[in-house]
Amino acid sequence: QDDEAVISILNTESPVRKLGFFGPNLEGLYSLSTTELSSYWHYPSAQRIAHFPTLRDTLSVDYLVDCIYNSVSQTLQLITGRYSGEMIVVDVNPKDFAMNASISGHSAMIRCIQSVGNDVYSGGEDGRIIGWNPSSAIGRIEYEMLSEKSKTTFPQIEERMDDSLKSHDHDGKLIESIQPSKKRMKLTD
Image (cartoon, rainbow, N blue to C red):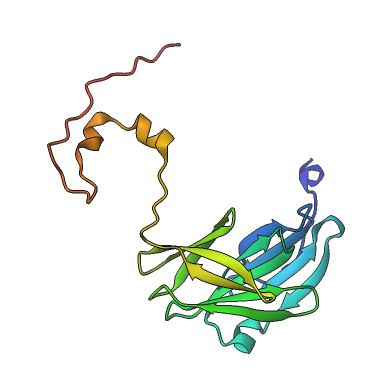
């Protein structure tokens, strides 16, 4: 009965740390291992289309972070890094890989990356989350740090905030003491 639940098994030959899907129809699957190897499959056929066991040494990077799929250019980018906080963006395809950009902004190891719309956000051991704006320029992606002055607001969340939480000024300084809410929620069957 357990065998009926298995859709497919892909052997990465290393412990898997991250995996994700990519491609216009999510037909690609990537995996990053705990030993900093990267492998790529055509998921419907379970065929490995690329495996890069020496990527880290070839690019002189210290670790692999994650992959991001750019649906506009239909390219898969592997985000790698150096312990200094430098982020290296690598374009990956079935035949090879190529360094796309070297980006500075963090001062320590980058732990995670997330794309949201056209922007990319990275989080690091330096306690910073940095927003990046990738813009196409002469066949390569250049990343510019999003301005710290441009702040995104979330009006829906602000409208729902408890009045006691709005007692802070814009610099986060406490203007008046925060009182716990007196409202109680009644649970019903």
